Image (tube, rainbow, N blue to C red; front, side):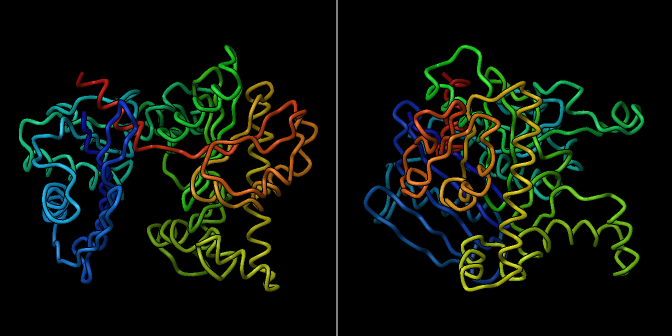
Length: 396
């Protein structure tokens, strides 16, 4: 069984070819700078890694090159695209239409198109990926896997905004949440590490350039930090996260922004980048902090403090917590963020172990003391496997 997993962005295209039964990754790669000068493909197999510098003006050109790289040349892994059983697509926003992954048909495409205003930076590219694959690989089943689907179990008391109720009824103004495939995967792995505990309370911290936290009760999302869009919640690489709405009007007056410029400012020029003045990359900020840069130190403290506040809030929403999980690029690799976040959480039953935390590993592991009432785990996420697995389950 071979599933082609596709994550189409506005100017990039990530992909994997996976066997969902064995978790074997046959190939992984990314097309960068689609429609921009200097475009290239990075393609990696078990024993080969190649880079092809080639212009691909459109997503169709990029996907066509990926398929050729999978089936020919020095890094081929299959003889023909006929060996691909199905294609699984990451789609960022499923609104209230989709609470699970679905086989793509005309109705699904129509509904994704209706949701374009809710994710104008992501859904158009995701939809383009679906349509291009349908053209290049006619007859192959396509499956849409939604970032928002896992959070459709949230109750009204956590997904509603406190604006007039007709705003929800008329415009679907509400919290949707994102990173659902990651929160689903990591929370399920945590439940296994808890000995398949029947009733579980798990907090998942997905920390990367985009970050979110999720409260998971008995395997279901009951609250998450991202909202109508990915801007709400934690401090991220370039996103501000939570901010007083009146601060936006204040910025508009002081800087002469219109609303689009203000939202762009909060999405792309704020967060770690804005506070540190160094970079949106935490690794560079940590280096600057070690060298005595006060703004870099402030950025690190701000990230971990905001995360700690959410963990404490979600422990209250859950009525306790069995495990706190760290995942994604920062969550899996930045030991200082994990340490600062877990400081002074003893009242939640956390006994943190610095020695375990400082040991680097690519494996899922516990970084709390063996005596800790509340476990702290580092669990590498695997969103591509979730997409491949859902695709397999829908086509089998």
